[in-house]
Length: 591
Image (cartoon, rainbow, N blue to C red; front, top):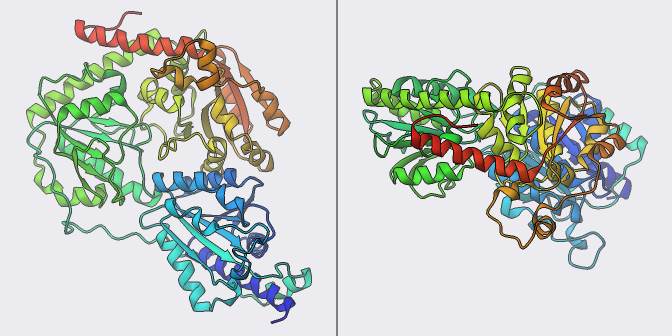
C-alpha cells in the first residue's frame, strides 16, 4: 500500500469510527492536539463542520477529561475525548477515576504507534494501553498494524461494544487506536475522501434502557413497612434518562410510608417531596430523637459525606437496605446493609404492593422530626441574616434566596459541598446540585463546571481558592467559548477544609506550610488575563446585585468573596456545640 493511500485509509477509518459513534448517540467530542491522533482530529473536525458533532478543543488533557466529564454528567450521554500518544494518555487518569466512581460515561480515544514501534525506544511510545485499565469499564485496542486494517464489520463491532460498555453500568471506556504512518493526507486527498463519504442525517439512535419489569428475579425484599423507618438518599448516580422514573418511585415511596427522608444536596430529589428533613446534618444526632429506638433504614445510592450521619447509621444497627442505580459494586463502607443494584424504580415496583398505609408510629416520628427541622430553619434565618460581613456559613444561608429558581449549582468537592449541605439545606430539591464526590478530588473543578454550563445553560460554580487554582487551565476553555458560568470564589487564603479537621500542628505557620498552603496568585488578575471579567464582593448586602450582574453577562465571570478560614472554622464548631446544648435543654440556640 502506498503512503498516499495509507494516509487516506487512516482518515477513512477514523471517520467511520466517529460516524458510527455519532449514530449511536455521540454528540460531544473534546479534542487535544497531537500528531499521532491526527486522523481522529481531522475526522472530528470534518464531522463538526457538517453539523454532526459538537467539537471542543483543549490544550491540556487533564482539563479536557474533566470538561468531558461535565458534558457527560449534564447530558447523560457518553462524551469522547481524543488525545495523542504518550503522557497525554496518562493525564486522562484523574478524569477516568472520577468517571468510574461517579458512574459517568466517557469514551477515551487515544492515538498510538503500531506494534512495530513498541518497546524499541521509538519516540513518544509508552505502554499507554495499560494507563487507564484500573479505572475503565472496558479497554480495547485497534489492530496492532493500524486502524486502517480493521474490516467494516469489525469496526462496527468495536464501536458498538465501546458504546454499550460505557452505559452498562455507566463509566469510562478506553479505545487505544494505533495508526501507521503517514498520518496526514493532503488537503486535496481530504476533500476527495469527504466528497465520496456518505453522510447520514443527524438522526441518532436513542439511548436504549431496559424496560422496568415488576418482581424481577433477585430483587431484594423490602423492610417491614408497619414499623417506623427512615430513607437516606445519597448523591444521584445514574443517567439523566433514568432520573424521572427514580423520582416518581421516590415520590410514591414517601407518600405511602410516611417515613422521613434525609437527602444529600446531590440526590436530585423533587423540591416538594413529602417527608423531606432539610437540616438533618445540623440536627444529627441529638435533635432527631431516639424515642422510637433503632429505626429501619432504606439507603439510596452512596453515603452522603457526613461523619454524624455515619455514626447515627451505626447506632441503627445492621439489616439496613441499600438500593443502587445499576452499580453492583459494594457501596456500603459501614457494612450494615443488604444491597440491591436493580435501581429504585424496579425495586419499588417489586415491593410497593406490601405498603398499605403509614402507621401512626411512623406519622409521629415524621411530625417530630419536621418540627425540629422547622425550629432550626427559623433560628438559622435569625442568626445568619443576609447582610453585613461575609462568613462562609452566612454566605451559604443567604445564597439560595439570591439565585433564580432552578439555576444549576456545582459545588467544589471540599468545604463548599459540605457547607451547602449544612447551611443551604432549605434549598434541597429546588435546583439540581452537582459535585463530583466519586473520588472527592479537587481536580478539574473549573473545567467540569464549564462542561455543565455548555449543556445546561447558566450555571453557578461555588469553589474555594485552592480548587480553582488547581484547575487554572480551565480558564483557557472559558476564554475560547462563550459559556454562561458564574464562578463564585470563596477565597479564604488556603485550604479552609483542613482547619475543620483535627490536624495537630506545632504552629500556625507550620499548619499553613503543610496543609493550608495559601497562594499568592491574584484570582481576579488571572481570570482577567484570560479575558474573563470579575468583581470583588465586600459584604453580603452586595451579593444579590453581583449575582444579577454575573448572570446577565451570559458568559463566564468571576465573583470573589474573601473570608477568614480560621474564624469560620471556629464559627462552625460554635454552631454545632450550641445546637447540641440547645437540644439537651429542649430549646433553641443562643446567638
